[in-house]
Image 1 (spheres, one colour):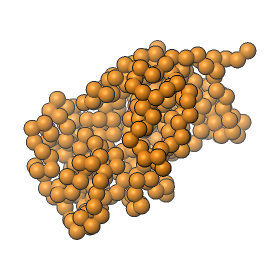
Image 2 (tube, rainbow, N blue to C red):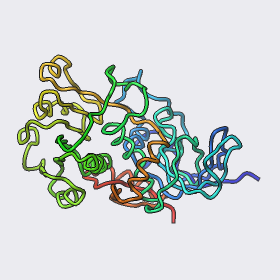
Image 3 (tube, one colour):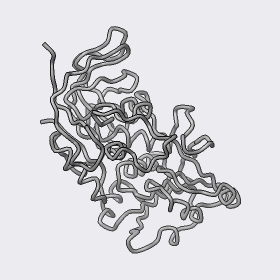
Image 4 (spheres, rainbow, N blue to C red):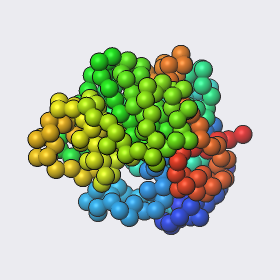
Length: 336
């Protein structure tokens, strides 16, 4: 008899209302994979981009999205089954990971069970629960690969230049735009771990939260334009990114860098004339890097803030919360 599970599936593209709770077969792990009983799922921007059918992505860059589709990439859970060729994990191990991204844009994480490449997983830190671990995966790896170590040689699909993170230390000043969000609040903490001075940009409601995480200076963008208030920083990590990211070029000192997390629109000649390096990377799954992040979570060097927790069957509400914006940390789907 075929085992079944509850899963959220897309049968069409559209708003949160297209997320549907279905009963589907439990997947079987293939070579190099484990089966994970999911305890929590991190909700990320690619989830709602996929739900919408990625209408704004150029056709030559648009990934294949075959319906019906179980969305989700970030999981924390318990190993249920292990393929014969997998070492390092055993049934009963608590694990977390970003699965198959970006090779597969959505990996079936919005479900009671999911198969996962063993190389994409790390052992869950004992000091954090499944909700926090699920919230750490994509956002933590994005912050890590932008600021600490790319860990791969794959070029970004949006630019030719290779991303090489600036070496951070006590002599560097980093401005994090969108500092209260999933990537931003973890990037702030990683920069502080590397002894940098950090300027956090967010709305005023997040000031005490970000100062508690270590921000040395705070700018409320609803009152002050950060690009007009600051000059001479070594690095801007723009977690908002997009077309307006180039406004931060004037904030960076000559020889510094600007990293837009979401693709921006830049003039290479203008950047070169200002002496500012503008590069980005596309986050990739890495169990090895998650293990390094896990050690920082375990000793409380960094922590994952949780904005809201929803049940799997309430994934529509989770996506509606994401659409409201002004998120502090991560939105997570969790099982009882």
